Amino acid sequence: QSALTQPPSASGSPGQSVTISCTGTSSDVGGYNYVSWYQQHPGKAPKLMIYEVSKRPSGVPDRFSGSKSGNTASLTVSGLQAEDEADYYCSSYAGSVVFGGGTKLTVL
Amino acid sequence: QVTLKESGPVLVKPTETLTLTCTVSGFSLSNARMGVSWIRQPPGKALEWLAHIFSNDEKSYSTSLKSRLTISKDTSKSQVVLTMTNMDPVDTATYYCARIFYVELRFDPWGQGTLVTVSS
Figure (cartoon, each protein chain N blue to C red):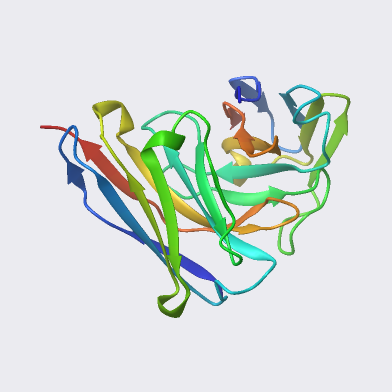
C-alpha cells in the first residue's frame, strides 16, 4: 500500500482557519469512510483527533473538523491557537491501514 | 482509564530479532470490539502501521514487512507481543502500540512509544 499524500507544511495566524488535505485512491480514502486524523506534538505520542472522516472523540475541541470528497480527505482547524502547532497525520482503511506522510502545522 | 505501555530493548544489533511487549490496562484483550496495533516512526519521519491483532486472534500485517513480523497476545497477562526478525539500521524507530477499534480502525489511545536503535 502506498502512503497517502499530505502537504509537508501548512500555516496560519492565530484565529484563522487552515485546511490540511490527505489524498489517496479509490482503494483507500475514496473507498471507505474510515479516515482518521492524528495530532503529534514533538516528542509525544500521536493523539486521535478525528475518526470516520468527521467524528470527534470526546475532549477534542470542535475547532477541529473533518470532511471527504472523492479520494481526498481534509482536516480543518478553525480559530487557530498556539497549541495547535504540531504534526498531523491522516490514516485510512485500505484492506489494512495506511498513513499519510504528515503535515507540519505552524501557527505564525 | 485506558493505558498502553511498550517495553523492550533499546539497542539491537543488525540481523538480530526484536521482541517488543505492549502491556495494556483499562480494557480487556478479550473485548470483541478492540485490539492492539503496532506502529513505528523513524526519527523525523512519518508513521508506519506494522500489524494488529484482535480478540478472536485475527491478525493483519504490513504487506512490505509481513515476512519479518509476528504478533501474538496473552489475554491473561494483558500483553501483546511483536517480533521483528533480521533487524537492520533502517528499522531504527520509535515503536508505538495503540488500541485499535475493530470497525473504524481508529487508534486510540497510544502508548508513549519506545525508541529502538539498530546498530552494531
